[in-house]
Image (cartoon, helix red, strand yellow):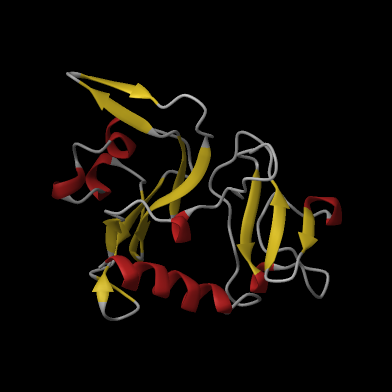
Length: 170
Protein backbone atom coordinates (compact mmCIF):
# COMPACT_ATOMS: atom_id res chain seq x y z
CA UNK A 1 0.00 0.00 0.00
CA UNK A 2 1.19 3.52 -0.76
CA UNK A 3 0.43 6.55 1.36
CA UNK A 4 1.27 10.25 1.43
CA UNK A 5 0.80 13.37 3.54
CA UNK A 6 -2.07 15.50 2.24
CA UNK A 7 -4.06 18.64 2.95
CA UNK A 8 -7.58 19.52 1.83
CA UNK A 9 -7.75 21.94 -1.08
CA UNK A 10 -10.46 24.04 -2.69
CA UNK A 11 -10.77 25.47 -6.18
CA UNK A 12 -11.23 29.24 -6.35
CA UNK A 13 -11.69 30.31 -9.94
CA UNK A 14 -8.57 29.11 -11.72
CA UNK A 15 -6.47 28.50 -8.61
CA UNK A 16 -6.25 25.72 -6.08
CA UNK A 17 -5.64 26.67 -2.44
CA UNK A 18 -5.24 24.83 0.84
CA UNK A 19 -8.33 24.99 3.06
CA UNK A 20 -7.40 26.95 6.17
CA UNK A 21 -7.82 25.14 9.45
CA UNK A 22 -7.97 21.66 7.92
CA UNK A 23 -5.35 19.25 9.25
CA UNK A 24 -2.60 17.55 7.31
CA UNK A 25 -3.16 13.80 7.23
CA UNK A 26 -1.54 10.61 6.03
CA UNK A 27 -3.82 8.86 3.55
CA UNK A 28 -3.41 5.58 1.63
CA UNK A 29 -3.58 6.48 -2.07
CA UNK A 30 -2.73 3.29 -3.96
CA UNK A 31 -1.54 -0.31 -4.04
CA UNK A 32 0.68 -2.69 -5.94
CA UNK A 33 0.91 -6.46 -5.75
CA UNK A 34 4.40 -7.54 -6.72
CA UNK A 35 4.61 -9.76 -9.80
CA UNK A 36 8.25 -9.71 -10.86
CA UNK A 37 11.39 -8.58 -9.08
CA UNK A 38 14.10 -7.39 -11.46
CA UNK A 39 17.66 -7.07 -10.18
CA UNK A 40 19.37 -4.49 -12.36
CA UNK A 41 22.82 -5.89 -13.11
CA UNK A 42 23.79 -4.47 -16.50
CA UNK A 43 22.39 -2.59 -19.45
CA UNK A 44 21.75 -5.89 -21.21
CA UNK A 45 19.65 -7.29 -18.34
CA UNK A 46 16.82 -4.79 -18.56
CA UNK A 47 13.62 -5.57 -20.43
CA UNK A 48 13.06 -3.34 -23.42
CA UNK A 49 9.82 -1.89 -21.99
CA UNK A 50 11.71 -0.54 -18.95
CA UNK A 51 14.73 1.10 -20.60
CA UNK A 52 13.33 4.60 -19.95
CA UNK A 53 12.98 3.90 -16.20
CA UNK A 54 15.47 5.77 -13.96
CA UNK A 55 16.58 2.57 -12.24
CA UNK A 56 17.86 1.34 -15.61
CA UNK A 57 19.30 4.65 -16.84
CA UNK A 58 21.19 6.24 -13.94
CA UNK A 59 23.25 3.27 -12.71
CA UNK A 60 22.20 3.07 -9.08
CA UNK A 61 23.93 0.95 -6.45
CA UNK A 62 24.44 -2.80 -6.20
CA UNK A 63 21.00 -3.34 -4.63
CA UNK A 64 19.22 -1.66 -7.54
CA UNK A 65 15.89 -3.47 -7.88
CA UNK A 66 12.70 -2.82 -9.83
CA UNK A 67 9.39 -4.27 -8.65
CA UNK A 68 6.85 -4.96 -11.38
CA UNK A 69 3.14 -5.12 -10.62
CA UNK A 70 1.31 -8.42 -10.82
CA UNK A 71 -1.63 -8.68 -13.19
CA UNK A 72 -3.93 -9.41 -10.24
CA UNK A 73 -3.96 -8.69 -6.51
CA UNK A 74 -5.54 -11.39 -4.36
CA UNK A 75 -6.48 -13.23 -7.55
CA UNK A 76 -9.37 -10.94 -8.46
CA UNK A 77 -8.44 -7.25 -8.26
CA UNK A 78 -6.17 -5.21 -10.48
CA UNK A 79 -2.53 -5.77 -9.56
CA UNK A 80 -2.00 -2.06 -9.02
CA UNK A 81 -4.08 1.05 -8.85
CA UNK A 82 -5.02 4.34 -7.26
CA UNK A 83 -7.91 4.80 -4.87
CA UNK A 84 -10.24 7.17 -6.72
CA UNK A 85 -12.26 8.28 -3.70
CA UNK A 86 -10.97 10.08 -0.64
CA UNK A 87 -12.55 8.09 2.21
CA UNK A 88 -11.95 7.86 5.97
CA UNK A 89 -11.14 4.12 5.74
CA UNK A 90 -7.99 5.16 3.85
CA UNK A 91 -6.84 7.62 6.53
CA UNK A 92 -3.89 6.59 8.66
CA UNK A 93 -3.84 9.81 10.71
CA UNK A 94 -6.07 9.73 13.75
CA UNK A 95 -8.66 12.44 13.20
CA UNK A 96 -10.79 13.64 16.06
CA UNK A 97 -12.68 16.82 16.94
CA UNK A 98 -11.62 16.69 20.59
CA UNK A 99 -7.87 17.23 20.23
CA UNK A 100 -5.30 18.92 18.09
CA UNK A 101 -4.67 16.84 14.97
CA UNK A 102 -1.12 15.56 14.65
CA UNK A 103 -0.52 13.80 11.32
CA UNK A 104 2.09 11.65 13.04
CA UNK A 105 -0.50 9.96 15.28
CA UNK A 106 -1.97 7.05 13.35
CA UNK A 107 -5.04 4.96 14.05
CA UNK A 108 -4.64 1.39 12.81
CA UNK A 109 -6.83 -1.72 12.95
CA UNK A 110 -6.70 -3.58 16.26
CA UNK A 111 -4.94 -6.59 14.68
CA UNK A 112 -1.95 -4.29 14.14
CA UNK A 113 -0.93 -4.38 17.82
CA UNK A 114 2.55 -5.49 18.88
CA UNK A 115 2.50 -9.13 20.00
CA UNK A 116 4.81 -11.99 20.88
CA UNK A 117 7.76 -9.59 21.04
CA UNK A 118 7.11 -8.42 17.48
CA UNK A 119 6.11 -5.05 16.13
CA UNK A 120 4.09 -4.83 12.94
CA UNK A 121 6.00 -2.05 11.15
CA UNK A 122 9.72 -1.66 10.63
CA UNK A 123 11.26 1.34 12.41
CA UNK A 124 8.70 1.14 15.23
CA UNK A 125 10.10 -1.57 17.46
CA UNK A 126 9.51 0.12 20.82
CA UNK A 127 6.51 -0.15 23.12
CA UNK A 128 6.40 3.62 23.67
CA UNK A 129 5.31 4.13 20.03
CA UNK A 130 2.23 1.90 20.39
CA UNK A 131 -0.93 1.99 22.48
CA UNK A 132 -3.96 -0.25 22.26
CA UNK A 133 -7.39 1.32 22.59
CA UNK A 134 -10.79 -0.37 22.51
CA UNK A 135 -11.21 -0.81 18.76
CA UNK A 136 -7.89 0.40 17.37
CA UNK A 137 -4.14 0.59 17.82
CA UNK A 138 -2.50 3.99 18.01
CA UNK A 139 0.97 4.49 16.58
CA UNK A 140 3.09 7.59 17.16
CA UNK A 141 5.10 7.83 13.93
CA UNK A 142 8.25 9.76 13.15
CA UNK A 143 8.74 12.02 10.21
CA UNK A 144 9.74 11.51 7.53
CA UNK A 145 8.79 7.91 7.13
CA UNK A 146 8.41 5.68 4.13
CA UNK A 147 8.75 2.12 2.95
CA UNK A 148 7.65 0.43 6.14
CA UNK A 149 7.53 -3.34 5.96
CA UNK A 150 4.88 -5.50 7.60
CA UNK A 151 5.59 -9.24 7.61
CA UNK A 152 2.29 -11.01 6.88
CA UNK A 153 3.74 -14.25 8.23
CA UNK A 154 3.31 -12.72 11.71
CA UNK A 155 0.37 -10.45 10.82
CA UNK A 156 -1.75 -12.49 8.36
CA UNK A 157 -4.75 -10.22 9.06
CA UNK A 158 -3.01 -7.56 6.98
CA UNK A 159 -3.82 -9.39 3.76
CA UNK A 160 -7.56 -9.53 4.43
CA UNK A 161 -7.51 -5.86 5.47
CA UNK A 162 -5.60 -4.77 2.34
CA UNK A 163 -7.88 -6.86 0.12
CA UNK A 164 -10.97 -5.29 1.70
CA UNK A 165 -9.61 -1.78 1.04
CA UNK A 166 -8.76 -2.61 -2.56
CA UNK A 167 -12.10 -4.39 -3.06
CA UNK A 168 -14.05 -1.32 -1.86
CA UNK A 169 -12.41 0.80 -4.50
CA UNK A 170 -12.15 -1.45 -7.54
